Length: 256
Image (cartoon, rainbow, N blue to C red):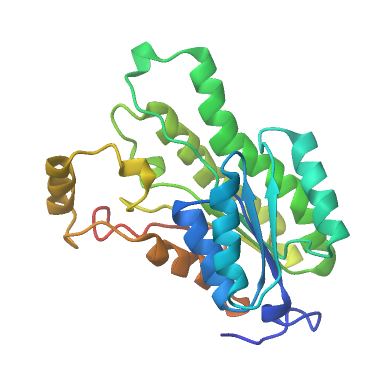
């Protein structure tokens, strides 16, 4: 693990990471990966209290400070209350991983305006609000990392996933633009756009559908959450400071 100092302020291992949507799947894997590195971890969740506590217990096994917080990231007030609690615990995030998100399947002709608002607010507005609330601390210390978890469908689009694709495409554009704003302040902004990952988002697929999917991926398999977590960790490192404004897609060769 790197022990490089960020602007002579603190060791990398002394930093705090906030992972949104960390109660399961990719978010849980990311939280555990940072705990393995000895870092302070904030496990955010919205409803899954027991699952979040289970992730927190796994992180605590590495002897790190862990805090679990519930918040509706579509609400600025909720995020500000979360920020206040982090300040009280001296756990302002040096690294923000915007991972929380929901999927949506269905034909565009059948979608309601409420469904549109729900997907865009959860997947895109939350990234905007969290970044806006937490980046001033990073700017003040002239160091920080914002890593947004996007999707391959934000790059290519997917039939019957128009809203999801649009929200993740927005995340990708948001990432590229904000990176240019924050680069002079020593804050990097990148996105991870995974292909198929073995999480609840593909749990609805039948076995034959999973097999067809694997056959379509040159690597011949679906990714594990830990593989995505490792890439997030890499982008958070001090020595990754020249990597910003990028959308990195670990997809097994599915998209090149």
